[in-house]
Every structure is written in structure tokens, then in C-alpha cells.
Length: 412
Image 1 (cartoon, one colour):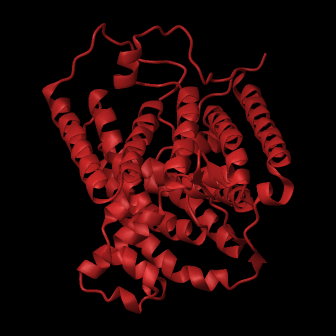
Image 2 (tube, helix red, strand yellow):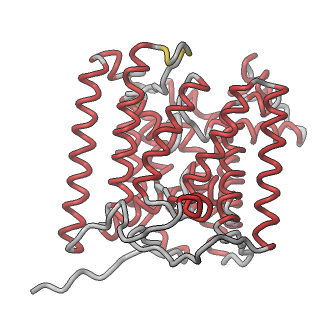
Image 3 (cartoon, helix red, strand yellow):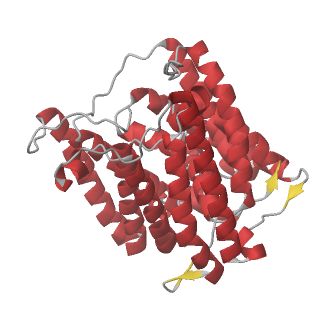
């Protein structure tokens, strides 16, 4: 859906019984899980669950996806999604860099996602990029669309989890290959020079994307639509939100995550844990797997998922998206999925899970939070992931999946 136009909204607000049921279930589950997490874990952990819910609501209502944004940029020259990402990254870096340099945020010790730079990131990000387009969503996109009732994305998520388990097992091999140790721009250059450099790169990418779109289509798709006056309460409940609002809120919520968790927002590390627990429940001895042999991994495997920060936030994200889709009147699961798209969901999920583990994260943990952490690997990740996206966009029609393209304006 284009962010420059919005459907008309009836005065007042009402919700049908069909939508009220999932909305009520989502809110009840979120409340119960928040209370239980606070009692069995900690208040900050419960706060992270609610932060995840807020992220799910924001992603759903602003339709803030990475997969579609990259696809329309590559295939159609549309840059609104890319430009919104640059705004989000710029604000995140402004907030993160001073805190990471100090090592504390309001008295809370904090650290970023800074990972090695090597073949593992190159291959993993490239595979993840292909998987994004075949699976139909990225790390965050898979979760919020599953929460929103997309049945096809449930298939993607299942194989995303399976690929994560396999990828984590193979990670040690790739880490032994030549590469560069974790490199933080803030640590090596200081937070102000690092920030100025990043902001300059964001501005250049923003301007380049805008120029490409103007050349292709004659005008820019705005990040903030005009001519829409609605009650704030109606917008918050039903959406849709402007892309620029989604960008700003996501950056602020990631900063809140940094404070509550002591590290940025991540998505996919939880998937390997979920998969390992499923395998263990099925009778597989996970202690014989290299990736689950040490005491720390065994403790996570035997412990509660509510003790895992990423899992808690992922649960909240899906429940928040479910509530958002229901209040928007859009929770309508579709069960008819063409066989070719089932196959693409399987392939996409496996590629994303495997790639995310090799590259130390997905579009959130490696790209968004990696760059906000001043990690060099975040920039390598997006470069390689875009190459994978290009391949994935080319492959989509093979599986009966559309690629958005619009007509060029007539030349005078």
C-alpha cells in the first residue's frame, strides 16, 4: 500500500466481533505474560515485553518493512522506505553513540552489537537478502506479519527457526576463516567523528535515493502525507501511520531497549534457542551439538524462554502486531496458499535463518542495531544483503510472487 494515500475513515470508532476476539485475546495474553514475566523474572524484563509489543504495533501500523522497501527500490526506483530507514538510523545514532561511548545510560551499563567482519558476514548477509524476498519478509517483518494473521509467514517462521539452528552449528567453522576482529567506529574514532561520518553517509544515501526516484517517476513519494486530519486516538488504534512516524518511533524504542536490556534490539538469536528447545523436546541430545555444548548455552536451553530477552521481545512484538491488526479491522488469516509460494516460504525461511546466524543478525540486529552500535559489520551486512535482495527480486516471479513496478511518466 502506498504511504502517500490513505483510505477514508469513518467518524468515530467501532470494532466488529470478528476483530474484537483476536484483539481481546492479544491484550489478555500480553497482560498475563507481562505480569508473569515481572513476577518470575524482573520488572525490566516485563518492560522489554511491552517494548516488544510497542515495536509490533509500530511496525504494523506504519507498514515499516525492509523487504518491500528494498524490492521497490531495486525494481521500481521507489525510495520512500529507504529514506525512512535513513531517518531512523540517523536518529538512532544520535541517541546511541554518546551512550555507547560513555558505557552507561542513566546509570545502566550498556554495550552495542559489534561483531567480526569477515566471510561469515558476507555469505550470511547475502543469503539472508535472497531469503527476504523469497520468504516474503525479514526478521521483524516475519514476526509482525505472523502476528497480523499472515498464514504463509507462519511457514516462513518455522523454517526460519530451523535454519537458525543449522546456521548456529556451522558458525564456528566460518569464524575460523580470515577476517577482521569486531570494529567499533565509536571506540576507534570517538563518538562525535563517528556520528558525523554516519550522518553524512545517511544524507548521501537519502539524497541519492530521492534523485533516483525523481528521475524515474518525476516526483517523490512523501514520508509524511498531507491533507489528513483525524483524531489521534483513531490513528493510534486503526492506523495507518506515516512512514516518518514509524521511523522515529522505532529509533526511540530501540533506545529504550538499550536502556532496559543493556544492549540494542535484536530478533533472530531467539529463533536458534526456540529451535533447539523443539529439537530437545523431540528427543535430540543437543549437548552433543557444538553450538549447545558449553554451560551458558545449556543453561539457556534448560531455562525459561522468559529469561531470554530476545524471546520476550519477540513474543511481545507478535502480540502487539496481532492487537494492531485486529483494531485496524485487518485480521483475516488466509489459508489458501499456492504450492509454489509454500516452497518459496520454506526456502526463504531456511536462507534467512542460516544467513542471520552466520552474519550475527538480521535486518534488525545486524543492520539497524549494528549500525546504531557503530559496528563496521553493520555496513558490510547491508551491502551484501542488498546484493542478495537483487537476486531474490529476480527469483520471485519463478515462485508466482509479484514484483511491484509502475509505469514511467511519458517523456515530453
